[in-house]
Length: 553
Image (tube, rainbow, N blue to C red; front, side):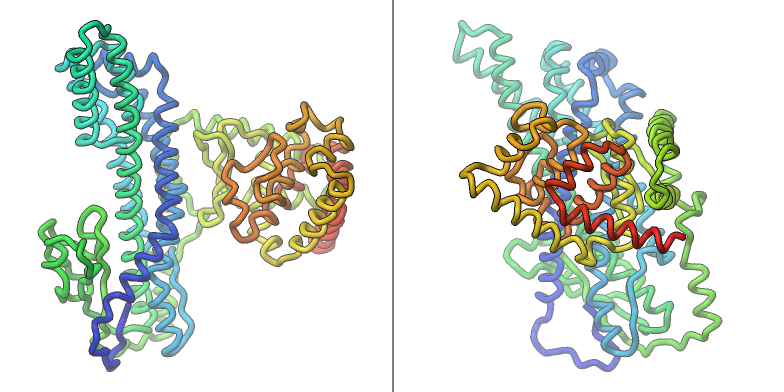
């Protein structure tokens, strides 16, 4: 929130408005980031083999191989899902500044690539990667040391260590103590119980405790980092506007959440006034803008104390040249620098997948689709993703390739890139035809008193492996049906989260991408089947491709 120079501040306390905006952002973005963090830790836990757990226990620390593995997965996560969420939070933090400037004088937009903003993002991501990896290493060592003091066997320590991946030092200490307490109580209260049985029961309890601990840690990290990004967006949008001569000098005030849960430290800093680039003095040290501590819900109010300085056209040009950067400048790309240090195996993985994709591309006879795929492939970055499944991240212009990615997967994700570039789905051009085809699909089975799945199985039995699963070449058809039915129709290839289909244009985007992969694999029978099941969609896709053909001549 900002008050312009000469603007009269209202008498009543205006703090709740800014706090409300921060809270709304957290309610919207935090749950998904928490889930991503839990998935990261679950994947890291699974990626370490039983033998590697034993090896770490014997050596008494994290091995170099595991450290490299943890750094790799953490870096990809921070530069992918984490960064995308932070950018969204920053943009929401800047919204009110953008709105007020636009109302006062001229159009203005917050540029994530603005020089000072970019530096903050790079520094923040680097610190996050280092901190998450370091915390994990320290926690593993504490588990091993503590288990040894308690006399837990090597195998027992390895079993206990596995579910604790993702916890910090204090949490693993509490968990190991809890495990030992449960075990000792069982042995004392049940003299005939064998030690192995007691360890098994204690391990189950420790696993459940660890699950709760991870959920709490995911919540605190997500809340703290998103709140920091929100406040950073507000701070740097003002800096950017000042460079453009749209805002004068400002002072800032700390604002607390204003409820009964505000801590003593935040109550003490509330109302503290400092210059824009000065730091708030808190019990946790000097802080440029909130959060002041973990899970802090504080925000900032800004007040313009002088009129904007006039910026000459030459100054504006110089500023734009300094602040903008090319997404193709690899030497200036933080992602390239970090990913490049992760592992040579990642590069080999991506190159092998692209080689397979390129081989299929060379034999394509549809020149229009070939040109579109080449254009998209050359304008996107590929990053290895240690998960099943792949994703196109539009904000970073990155395709995350999962470990099970195939050439058709790459085609699917590139069609998402094409969609994003040309705005196909969001134009609404596919919406009506999708609804038309699904309405017809619903009508036919009702006539015979059967389900859509039964009708498809009876009519197209050749595409099924068994009754509820289609062959891999027909995966796109299965996914489209899953989306049309909001997750109810399941024929083997689906999006695991039914809520995904509630996102704006999710079904249109997946329909377009699934048709893209079908065109790429050139399975005539799959195309004929898709045409029979989705005649209106197929016709519209052909119309879109025909328009591209005319444009690309």
